[in-house]
Image 1 (cartoon, rainbow, N blue to C red):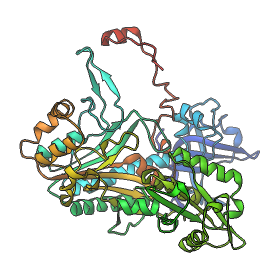
Image 2: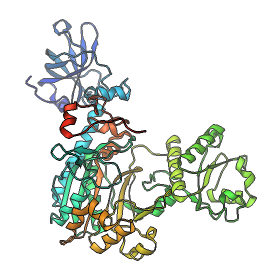
Image 3: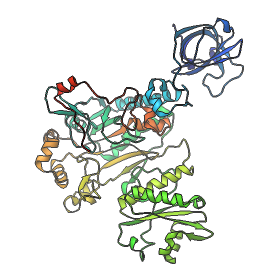
Image 4: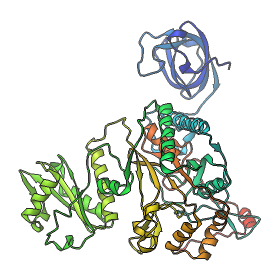
Length: 577
């Protein structure tokens, strides 16, 4: 087992060299007197030729073997392999360990469903593409450590067992054995602690932090995840964003050798919503939302009167494929966003067609054609209603059509900042004022005057970095003025008792000389997903949960012994429906 190198360390310059390699048998091809073996280690695959098959032990796929042999030039090179110009002429092969027939093909093109892959994750991880995802993840972390160290940041760990505080999602709770009836919470983020580190004079902090949120899952979300957590003192928004752009530039260069051009664009939140229907806009394709209020300013259709907004998009070249079934699906999608319906019109034979045209005047139909510069076979989709429901619907539809029509150029990266977020948002159902991000986000100085008169007008020093339509990170300048913080709590309807109960230790600390500070967190999992070239966050986590928040491999979560529950003073009862 005296391995001399990894497989892909070898090249044509090593021809004639005697080596010992160790790895898994990826494939065996028996050509009679000659046998070829694809030997796989973490670095990649190399071909082994066995000229005397009678001397080779009986081996099968996924056996671990040691090969002693000589590097030779391949008669038929394989340009798809890093080692495709060479092979190993085997002199001796030893079996280090055997393997059962695996329940899945161990290759990039596997036959396994995701449930099988997650159940046998240790086998799934042998696939080269899976190892590449983890390698990308590692390179991102190394770039982060290097850049932040160069910029005088220090890494500080914050508690995993902490106090339950309201941060937008449900906490994972941990019962205390010593203090019966009391619970720790797993951190949704290190938000409070990293701000306390600024009060503690650390000035520049970072952490590759584990975070936990008990919320419904989706393709780009996990219950336990990792973020690159950063906080600084004495930097304004421009200085901080500039520093973070340098970090992103280094990550892209050292991970995938891509040159990010700086500075990145900055798009105000309102502009992002108006034009793209999303606060994480993908601008790699040219489908934009249009405000149609001017087109319908004289409408006689009751559904378009006295509405908050009327907006739409046009899609080129899809009229012929937009069937009744497609229109019904679009209507159903609108209802998911809380809208009564959606209008779909098609331009065919120089005429705008659709059942809704009976409600339109000739002036309005001409206005639609002019607004969207419609051509034959184009479709226009529009609706009326609440801005915060309608814009996201149209934003989702523009992305859907872009994917289906192949409008997004592959292997491209679209990076931008979204800035000037509203500090507050009003719940559509209850009408209550809530924080858009968290109650410690600093309002813009020029908007402080609206805190008491109209809080929805207040914008914040908040910023998100968006990559290819994903929110890859976000943060803000933080409140450091006690009077402003009290006013924010008051606007949110929190009493002094509420504040003390939920944030007491944190608010107390602000009385002892709090520096102006700013921070953000990058989602390590999402960054890896984007740079690794997958749209599934489970691909880039070694041992992820499925969409039911279950680990098919270990079986977690599962029941525990009654004795463990008794130690904690906990009894499990049937959940009320």
